[in-house]
Amino acid sequence: MSKVDDFLQHYASEFYDAEKAHAYYLKTRQLKPRTTSGLGEKQKEAWAYAKNGITDKKNLAVQAAKDAEAKNISNLRAQASQMRANLSSRLKMFGASSSSAERQKIASNLTSAISKIRTDYNAAKVKLNSDYESKYQTEYNNITTKIAGDPKSKGKGKAKAKPKAKKPAVTKDSIYVNGKGTIGW
Image (cartoon, rainbow, N blue to C red; front, side, top):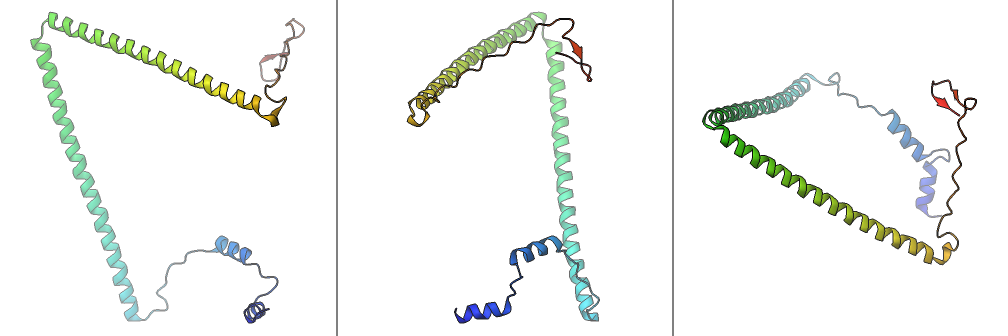
């Protein structure tokens, strides 16, 4: 043993466990506020001055954030009211100046656009499903051939299908109501 080991062993107890001590510390630690009871008069004044300064800065920051948020909200409300006014004027203009022929033309354009979008959507959906199905099938085939070709898995390549148990025929005598109010065999 070296001198360092002797020195450490001299001050360490065989019953001391550092991990347990640390776990106990973590379990029982509590933050305690500073007290001014042991301070002198000047130290108490300095303590109060620093504490008040920190509190004032914090209050100013909070108030500035509140003011900025209120200004932002008022700007957004002004924009929303302007947009509402714009929309209502457009609707009034559209309703007053357009004839039924114009409305019919707009309606037919909208229905044709909607039907075109629906057909495009259905075509994209069919293409996506077929792409997914082919990719899935390819991946499945690769996995099954890999398992079947693996020398470690001889006899394990394909799982044997378990025969399905047939449900018994339902007769008046075989039906009962269990405690939950459902019908079962």
